[in-house]
Image 1 (cartoon, helix red, strand yellow):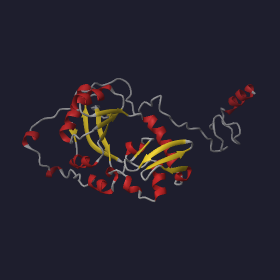
Image 2 (cartoon, one colour):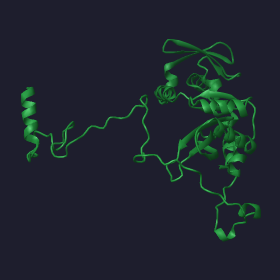
Image 3 (cartoon, one colour):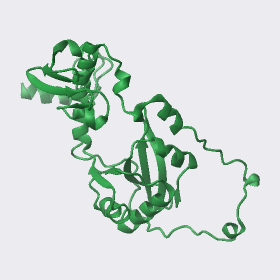
Image 4 (tube, helix red, strand yellow):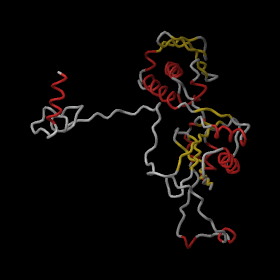
Length: 290
């Protein structure tokens, strides 16, 4: 099953030509895999494009999903796909979108960069820590913490590459713009403009309505759709996803409400006024260690 809302197809023309692909397993009765394709709007928010449901995550399923996507959305110039390192995703893109580029989403690397970037740009007075030197009317040399960067306002480039890649002024370009008392919005790409953002959401997604008002073609109504064949697995059904080794999980430390101390609970507390019946063995255990 494949579906792409008409509002998403129309709004895709006003999003950057970047599509992120991912899939997740369904825990319903008939299981299966849900394919999701999204993009980013002018406000850098998630913009859904299309969805698909298949039996499993393999080469045939991704080729089918990409084929339906190519029919639904407009194939644009310099199209870029982002995904994880699933080989079936890469094979499908190579087969259906040979003219597109494919990049691997380095989640943790991007997370670290965002944290560092937030520290660098979170301070409103960042330009005070940058020394700006005029080379000419459009070229400037920025000295930031002993590192020099060349900013070209006309070409909208910087040696840090952030200005030309994101098409937004980087911290070094902002320091130059502030010194020249220029308008920052003049150096943003049109992808981030208010007009583009409004055009992205011009379409409407209509509600399904009452079943009596449905206009179903006769050839569709006569077809009998049977549920897919499902292999029933042994054991209890998994409800929580497996956490990867590379993911950082915050450590939750226990805290006993009576003594207000961290690191133990009611059973192992030694300073509680009302000791637990099992606290005696813990007292003996800790006394032996001392």
